Each structure stands twice: as C-alpha cells, then as structure tokens.
Length: 146
Image (cartoon, rainbow, N blue to C red; front, side, top):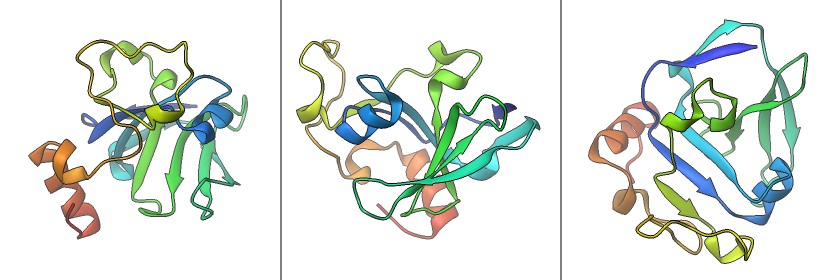
C-alpha cells in the first residue's frame, strides 16, 4: 500500500482515550484528520474492517491488504468524507506533530505532555480549536459549521 496526502490535514489529534490505546496497542493514537478526497492512493487498495467504537456507532478501519496495518479510520459522524490517517504510516511522520492532545484524563500516567502543548481532558469545540481555514474546508465538505 502506498498513499500520499494532497494537502495539510485539518488538524492532528494525539488521542489518549482508552479506545485508541486498545486499537493501537500503545499509549495513544496520532491521527491526521483530512478530507478523503485529499488522500491519494498510489499503490494497492485497502481493506475496510468494521470495528466497535466508544460511541457505539463503530468505525471502519482501512488496513493494508498485505500486512493489515491500520492506515486510517472513518468514524460514523463524517462517514467516508473524512479520514483519520495514522501519522505513523507516513514516510515522514515527524512533519505532523499533534495540534492538540485529547482525552488526557485517561492518558497513561507516565506519558508526559510537553509544556505549552494544547491539551484537554476530553474532546473540544471545533470552533475554539481548529483554524479558520480548517473550519471552512470542513464546512465545504460536510455543509455543517462548528
């Protein structure tokens, strides 16, 4: 599988929720949220696997058909319009540090969030966190504000 991002993501989440810990098998998940149309498939085709989620609505995880590594997720709220791309699957993951740490109330106690990093105990209001450009891109895509 090979893919690329055609633009910068809307936002990059470092999610410390217990579901992301379970899904990733690690202490957090680092996801770049981006419009599906801006993810360019270069080689291969992912397999979509439906898995449970904390919301009860489930999520579809796109996995490499050969190695089964999770590449991105689709959550029920945005359907297939947005992808939550696993930053670690990119050739240069260092280019996408987290914009915000979310669900820090359930982070592992030994994880240290850097001083000055934006962090919230649970989730947040998009209108208070996302850039104006990202909000406008989301509104164009989904037709909804906030």
